[in-house]
Length: 522
Image 1 (cartoon, helix red, strand yellow):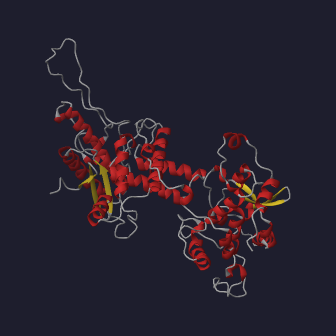
Image 2: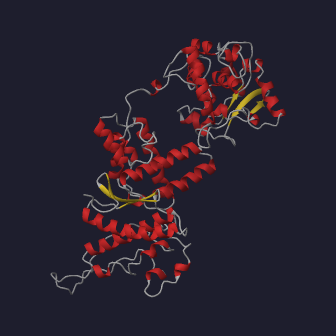
Image 3: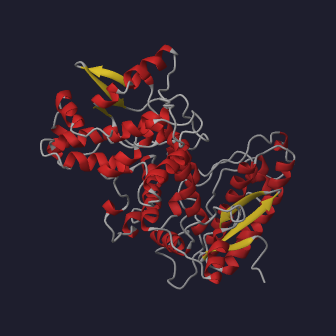
């Protein structure tokens, strides 16, 4: 038998969840005590009935409903704390029980409530009972919390506000994520795909732990999050059937069927790093975060070497790839994998060649603009920098790479001039994102994989990124190419503070000599 209507378990903690016309509202009850959870749930249910009525009337949004229910639960928590300290239950809720109160303007407590402290009087007998302090007010009362006629119903647009901190910023985890995402978007530090991933990780943490206020997070919540990731199937929620299924149900089904479980160490570590960014972002806004919370303490260490993640193309692989019909002659512009006499110099022709001669990342190449092809001291260069199409992985990724003489001989600079004459901003104008949240290079994946398989056969550990490994290894074998020159070409840090922070940029002649050390691919 269920504990109460809409009550669910999230690990050891209870949460309240209600679906209204296909839209779910979930509130953590932050307790393991069934009696306390039952009382908080009854308050949440009553508040949600009022909120959903306003939602049906079009007077508030589902987000307003969640905020209102959350405020009601928080207020009831204060009342429970007051009663636990010996207070009179009749006075535990100053301002009455009108649940419409929670769907209008009001302020929530700046910090987590603390149990009322008993006052001690020197004149009082040691055995005399001490009256508890008055219950804390979680919000200044509004007309809805006062007795008498409710006139403010005529102003429903004033929805309940999120709990505020002294800095004025909402302490709710998802609100903090939204603010941090806006900053990253504005400054170009993250793509839409990265922001979506960041948001999903935070939502997963809230769902697993039932904690949605950053001030309430404790280290044991992080441990519970990691434990759940160890019990999740690696492909969770990828199917339509699981998309809206609670995480607890997915874990239970996996354990019942004996399915493979456990996210990879890399995924666990990534999720913990992103979670740490949420806490640091909240702290920077003046929100109090438990100083003992440290997600990095639970990071996993993989036994395998990072170098084993992806195999490089060998020189023989590269020669076989560029013997494909795309570069030697295809049957037609639409049948590029079939041998013929047609050579079309479009993105499919140029992007892999640029990768082989620069070691640049796929997205760095696919997102180039015509303005990113320039000249420095008479040397044609590719300037890798953030632009309107895409950002970069990190600060050191911004660099300039001399254009290999073979690319020039093949007509790459002529191709660039042609795009400029046609007033095209994007160098590879026929490469577009599959969706606003995907990368530009994703649209190359299917065709590239087929070409690679045609020429090399299926090799799971080799991909387009293997060109980068090929170029790095090729220059490492050249004793005349210094380490700091290689690092600058590939957008790496040297690992030496003297070179990384104080070392000047390599002269363009040294960079050009390094690029030319890469052998011609055909």
